[in-house]
Image (tube, rainbow, N blue to C red; front, side, top):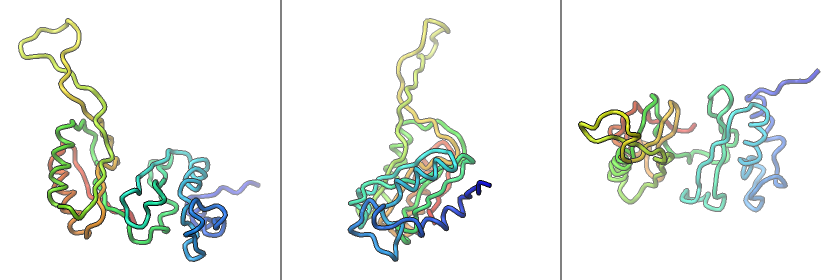
Length: 198
C-alpha cells in the first residue's frame, strides 16, 4: 500500500535526506544546517508531490547569502505558501507587503509606493519590487464617441491577485520595515497587509 506524504511529513524527512553531496553550496554546508543549499531541488520535489508553482527571490543583496544568488519556495495547489528550506536562513528573513484584495496597480502607483518606502528606509535598508507593470492601458479622449477602435496608450499596469507579495525589505529593524511598508501601502489602490516569513 502506497503511503501518501504530507507537507508536514515532508518537512520532517528533509533533514534526514539532505546532505553535503546534494547541496548546491557544499563548501558551506554543515551537519548543523542540513538544508543549506537545497532550496532548488527541494522545491522541485515538493512541486512534484503537492502540485502548485515555484516562487523565486533574489539573494544577491542579502548579506551572507550572495553566493546562493536565488532562493526558491512553493505555492502549493491549495494556495498555501510553503518554504521547506527556510530553516537554513535562521532569523534573517525579510519583511514583505502582501495584497489582500484584487486590484489594478498602475506604474505611477507602484513608483509612488517605492518612493514612500525608500524615503523611510533611507540608505540603510534594501528593498525589492516583486511586481512589474507590463499590461498596457488605453483610453479615449473626452467627448470621443464609441467605436473607431481602441483609444491611445495611457500607461501600464499590473493586475494584482489576493496573496501576491508586492514589496520586500531587509537590512533594518522589524519596526522600521513595517512602517516603511505601511507607508507604501497607502499609495496603492488595493488593501494590503504587512507580513513576515516565519
